[in-house]
Length: 168
Image (tube, rainbow, N blue to C red; front, top):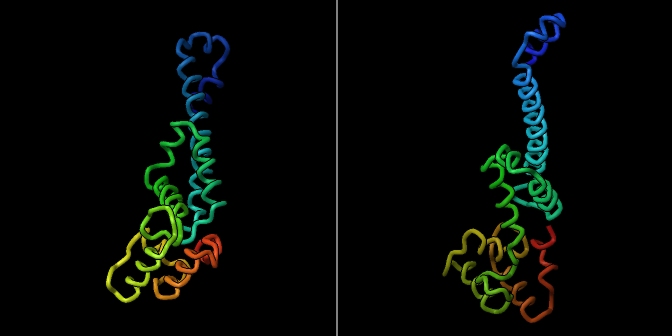
């Protein structure tokens, strides 16, 4: 495109008058500029998503990335790509976990504490989001101390937002 524009610009006015398809060059230039702008917008969002710590996403980084992604056009969203977008949705899911609510019934009670305790003595195995929800003290394991904190929360001695895992 640049070579074609340079060649056209080098023509005399009489030669330029003979060019019948200048509109194709102009359209190609417009399309190229739009592609550059789309790529730049998508790259800015990709950078925001890559700034999310997958192990410890923060609400601020995830919210900023989501808002930036949602502001993109469909063309720009396609440039972000599915794999990068999955990193954003995975971080959102991780933040959506209600710490202490292991069984997912939307309340923190003795049954949640029991599941944490059962996991700690290997009667059951918590995995994925259930494990994450149970690790309320954020030490990478689920043990009796997590069960105790969940039980304390169930009787309102502590608040769920005070769990170390919830403060990240």
